[in-house]
Image (cartoon, rainbow, N blue to C red; front, side, top):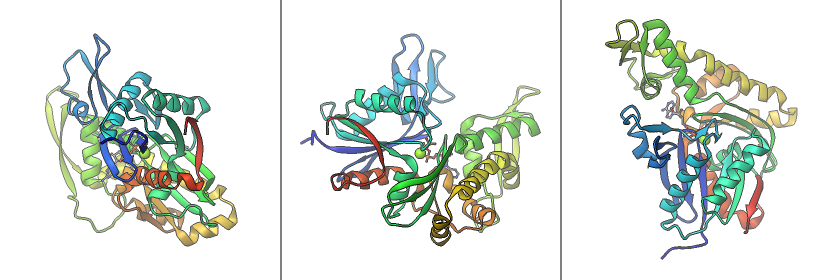
Length: 341
Ligand SMILES: Nc1ncnc2c1ncn2[C@@H]1O[C@H](COP(=O)(O)OP(=O)(O)OP(=O)(O)O)[C@@H](O)[C@H]1O
Ligand SMILES: [Mg+2]
């Protein structure tokens, strides 16, 4: 039997979409990808099935990521993707859930309205926005309502959201559109420049995940990886032995930009709260937090303790779930809502 009034939390990310259903937990994890038929404009595949088509799609099919840097860049594709994932998670098109959805902490009013409209049009009876770092903090197990400051750094695919949270609200924050995807692009461009080899986004991401290490910490990762690409000079396949050290060289620039932004937020943090952050350390969430040694690199640069949350990719969805459970108790941290409660 369906619960037609259920509450769900959606982490609508640049790389992936997670859905939390109240009393059930996270029920869906799918890549944020859709395949569109160029002739008809129809969506032909969504999520995992669309991602499998990357690099193999026929000429008339385009593979798109409708969320770019945490905000909607292709409205109709996002709408179809949301409708599909809401139906999958709730079990029926007739369920009109109350939806909590995350947004980056620096987002324009127009971008916020676009997200609200898409979620409502996708079948929500009410949409509640929550800032991504606030949801991430709750999901990482931080008691955000406590009268002390906590710093959260959420490194996703499109954005890095940094926030200092106290009494359930954001005191200082910064969101930059530099995160995991930018690291992948830096690896692609390094391969082009140093080896004259063309590789795709998925290969670059694989290099980052399989050998990427940004600080000298013990790890079981191999120190080298064989990368297959296309030689830009001869146009033929070419194999390159790529080392972990080279990965660090390749991603140094965007990585430095992320760490500089963390330092900037620390500089903006009022002294009282900075004392709390010094005591509590920095909590890292989002898929980018899994980059080996990143916590140690942040510790060395900032002088503050840093820890990666357990299951960092799920923190935002878990945080939305916890907030939904507390919605009736006047929980803090929400930006606004639209629709009937
Ligand atoms: N083990 C790993 N090492 C390094 N990076 C990783 C690892 N696992 C995942 N990632 C990266 O994490 C990013 C995706 O993280 P996440 O799912 O939190 O993003 P998102 O929420 O979809 O994006 P955003 O919040 O920016 O909209 C990708 O760039 C992916 O390559
Ligand atoms: Mg995210």
